[in-house]
Length: 410
Image 1 (cartoon, rainbow, N blue to C red):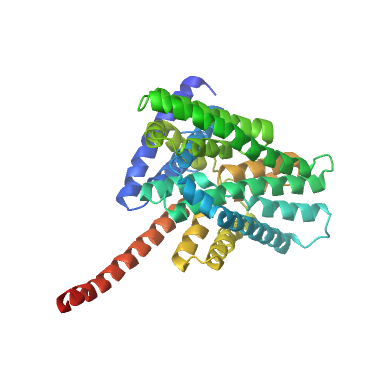
Image 2 (cartoon, rainbow, N blue to C red):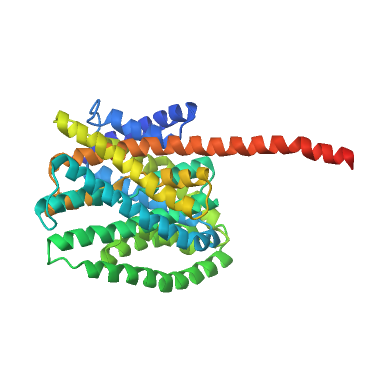
């Protein structure tokens, strides 16, 4: 693609994403919904003014990395440690319920086959696609609503990060069972090495940044070096350990989240993310969507695939949260917050195509799931938070007369 054409497409995406984002905000929906719809409208699905390109994909990748870095910077580390065991259980159940649901769905449509057969592995791979959670959209929504730093927001973010790691391990195991040359045990070792290395290098980098921040507070060199750390961790996570780059970016944010200037760094990063990288990332989801060649049977399977993908995440993560003592509203927030699919699902699907475990026609099902979950999750989350705040106000109103009455009696 000619780079001059790319500049035109980038201008169209930035303007349309902003316009649709403002419309979404006027309709009381999160702006990310409008940005995703902008990609749909401008992309091949409707008008075809903008096409997905390598340049656009790279900007979108930078966008989600910066979103995750900001999420790490704005994470309450004490809350993260407190929610760690609960987040792990939510992520674990939230992986295996969709895995079973997707496998069962494919088998119901195309027949149950013996364990070890090609049909069995195809069914298992459909389930594997459903394991991935896209934390970027949920993080941006929680940030817009002002609930990212709260207990439930931190729980969702940490559970989604763990979910991606478990999902990658499951993917490697599934491919490993079909292809003996791939060693699933290697991914487990690499994952452990990544987190051990992150702790060691992270402590060193924290004290270096603490020293710089102390002697050069509120200066732009701090966020510039922070962004460099983010990009290096994103690179190292995928290049050396086979972990998703967004996990590395999030860990880089965690390393710096306790600095005095962590909010200052986050604000500087958000300027770039808000102006260009974030809108391109969310719009790119719509750009990748193309529904040509859909047969009626594939459409029915796609709709069931989307329904199973959404419901199994809500059930798996939401019920686990409920069992752990959260109320129904909080549990629903966790379940809904975990049901988005995005770049990781695309990566998994692409891997399935290259390994011969997924037919190209099913890629449209994955795109449809990403679109539906990306649009519905922010809307439902906003409704849930509005309901919980409404209940809180109602409770306050009910308690007020009692307080006044006790004051009079006193």
